[in-house]
Length: 367
Image 1 (spheres, rainbow, N blue to C red):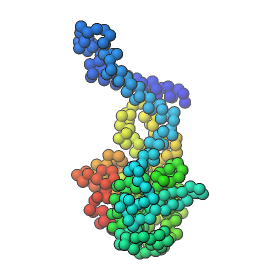
Image 2: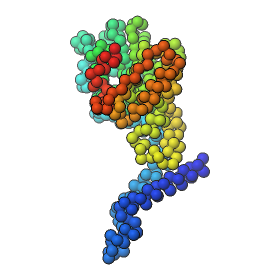
Image 3: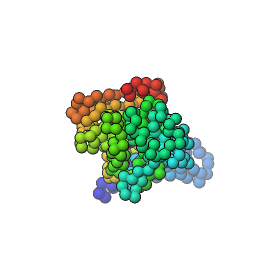
Image 4: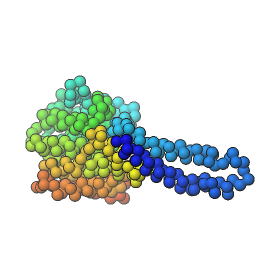
């Protein structure tokens, strides 16, 4: 309501003005400091009209404006959550995984909905790379009948399925004997459409079912989610568990509890986190876009083994959120009887948010 917006504006501006005064004092721009430091100078050269003061006022205006812009246009906040417009690395041809060093990978396109395609990569186990050379789609589809388990990888926000740290993980998993299937959600990479939590989950369910139809029923199928992809992964596994067909295991790399807690802990929110109305300006704008990614609620509806991997020096999804999720999962009644494991990677290893694939212990952990 307008009254609440006005109250929040008043509180935010009041707080900003206090910060402005402190900054002026620190820069020697208060009237008293001006008189001392500019004694004898022409009054026209007052620091209140100088470039430093003008720059400070511009920054203050931008600082105060951003919360109101996001509140008035919540779609901006959705873009900041998904970051699907950020393509890293740039200028790669997703139709050619070979260019990323994946010479045993097929690029293909699936249609979760009529007229909407998503880009998919299928990397076969490293033991099959020689046989894979020069093969077509029929060969890759038949490879699912080999005696190798499959991992469906759900990536996080920003970038594409061709991101470097993702490619390095595919290589590690392939070397361990897994098929790795990954895809770009609608709105990412070369996939059609625009992103939403519902659409991402729907795409993941479609690819999962597509895999199950092509695999030997006795072969394991695991779901691996990273960062924002952990939210898609728990959404997916919850739906699979509720229909009585959960995967063989769920692996969560750098997970959070829910998107509100993650957004509040994210480094980007640091400059606004303690200001009045932070939740209303920023977090409610996320909810207004129907973005929730409630991993903490989903673990109460999952019925398969769960493995959580988290680096202590993760600067994007704080370690304590992964630990909190593990605590909730270990007490979940639906996970009773299933193994729930948490593996922490010390800060000294410098794995941060996306380099856990470098751990020499990963093969033993997955076994």
